[in-house]
Length: 378
Ligand SMILES: Cc1cc2nc3c(=O)[nH]c(=O)nc-3n(C[C@H](O)[C@H](O)[C@H](O)COP(=O)(O)OP(=O)(O)OC[C@H]3O[C@@H](n4cnc5c(N)ncnc54)[C@H](O)[C@@H]3O)c2cc1C
Image (tube, rainbow, N blue to C red):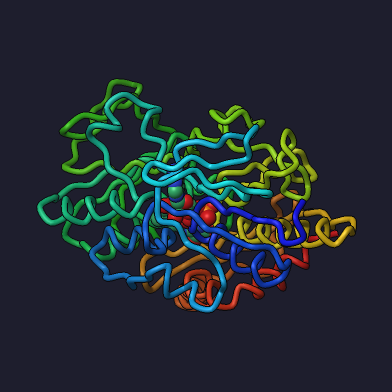
């Protein structure tokens, strides 16, 4: 490899942008960052966008001032692993010595008939903007999915539009990954906001006028918001990188592809394993830790050192419940609570600080991600 290797980072979301800046600053590599649009999208605020709130405009060029990174705004259409080059929709292919794959995730709208045609989502900025428009004339909304995104979307919409009927349908219980105490708090919050809840209900089809449940019941609504999980782009699989059943790139404990050692994967698009054998879940928090691990590993390997490994046992949930309420709960590996559960306005303030940090301070001063990540590198 050349003395100053060329590292190409695909995707300028939370993880790709942070990784590119840290690699440029800490490893001496030449860095090129490729992203499909010229601005940073604060995905963690998409439910706020859908509820009509104005979000900051964040041009990537502003966020990259002084970073010494070449930015290419173009869509990645393929990766030629043999030639070690990235193919673009508009421009010439870009060669690399090391590749960091950070293409994130999107809404999974293909799992149920009619969802792609009739539902909208909050996973992407354009979808969230479409939902905002549809909310102008809607009087009833069904949110499908009782995970963190569904909870945040339903509460934000219900708080913003108290005169609309908001209903959430989930095939499990609300916030199934959370402790019983946290779930009880969520139930009280939903009651307080007037959100109707349908647990253990499976949506079989989405239509123009609502959703059809597996038991044949029809829930009428003007708008259906689909939040049943994220899926990743097919690029890693299509390129021939080792991926799991869900298409996430398989990486070792230093975030390096298990099939191609010159490729690293971070964020939602890559599946790092936890000590208990499960995958690190998609999310900005876990994604930040994968960035810290990747940057350290690239730096260590370029310097001839053995890299440290990511070892993440517990987890943390930091959920907004509208603008005035929230829920923060950290957990041990077995899911039991770690420290007290924070709720109400203090949790809302804490959550806002986290989102503001991840989309502002953290991007301008990405070394903060390394500080957080050093806790879980062994
Ligand atoms: C409403 C909502 C609320 C959320 N709240 C939380 C939360 O509270 N806490 C939490 O931890 N997580 C939260 N998440 C999840 C979090 O947003 C994601 O986990 C995070 O964005 C993943 O970061 P990433 O860098 O992997 O991908 P992304 O942020 O999705 O970035 C991927 C980038 O790749 C670019 N890209 C994709 N394909 C291509 C291509 N072919 N060519 C070029 N560029 C491409 C995209 O434009 C994007 O810039 C939330 C998500 C949503 C939708």
